[in-house]
Image (cartoon, rainbow, N blue to C red; front, side, top):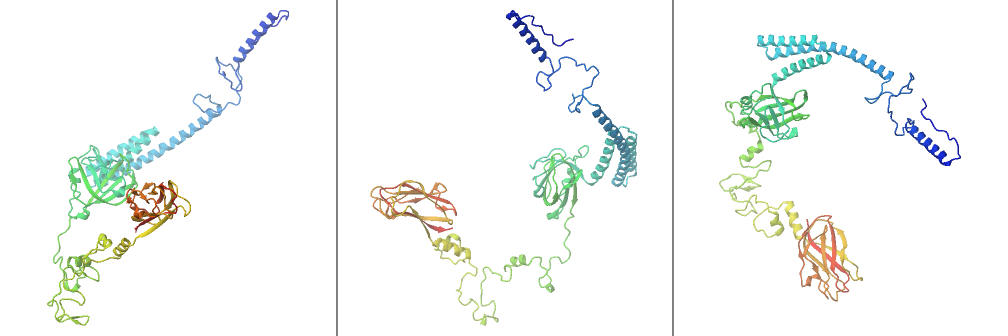
Length: 514
């Protein structure tokens, strides 16, 4: 059947008939092209009915990628090969699973035997359970189920060992010292090395959530106060993540949960919310009674059996080191009557030392910074090198002169006419300004800024016909960002009022160097 049938143009005698026939043929051609698949993918390019290949093949078909792609023989063959390999691996896994089951059964039996080595009935029961699990694993043909049973058996054995060593709790990542919830434990700091308190629930996370608070409440009962007990918290399944510390105070029982005061010793890794943890506890024994003669200082030891010589000297009131100090010591003639000091007879001159007035303080108090800087204190006080430096710094005023313009050009108004940086930190005590040529009218006025903020609450001005601010009718007042100026601070000087014809403006900062 022809896909396209066109009408012949019979005659061109009639233009109208010929044009009509050609137009109709064009419509048929256009419709036929629209119904043809495009090789370059131009739309529409989708089949609207089944495509009959008449027993011919489609060549160069790509391998399937999406679920809706047609599979090639090569791709199916690859899947068959992969399936055969998976079957082989499954058989190997089944064999290994059986071996693992036997090993798990052996481990579980050993763990149960260690846990209750004095209870023959319990040991026999545990052995029966392990044997039953091993039979179930060995007769299970399904590879996935077999592996799951092996894992369960191994986990049960491992859990039995862990349970024998401590109590299980689940980690709560909150650091608030409050009830952590059933079977949970909290630390008061997310950084393990910084933990100083632990909140632990009265109920453990072991099967049935048994109440262990009667035991945990006495963890801090030892009279060895600096180290009442050792605590080890380890992550189940990841033993490299742990926290070890010591309990340093009695446990606080908050009814339903308990709080431990601890000191960190060592830790590694980290804990995440809901992690399964095992908590081990080792109580420190009470401090023993003092033995006979405890505390006695033996003359034969010449005080060498004093625990801390410095502390003992302080308690005796003789200070520490090679140069002991004596507070409130009064020398009298009765102190020594037969000895000499520096060839001087103490019996004759025992009430005072040469050059020291009677009643003088042996170790007067150090002078304060305020008294050192003021220089007005009259009481006997000692000076340190720091106080001497502070006193000198307070008495020495440093001027800093800044030229704002030259000597021959009249000044003009503007901001930041001069910008500079402080060479050192200074506490202002005064600011001054001067001119080489006076203003014939108007009072030249300047502002000084530190980091863009004024250091004056009343601006610095020079009256007309005057060359110095010292005689200004309105005195300058330091305030705002002043008087303390920081080292390397950016300083700017503004001219708010230029006056008339004023020249040679200079600004002087006066203060002490900090």
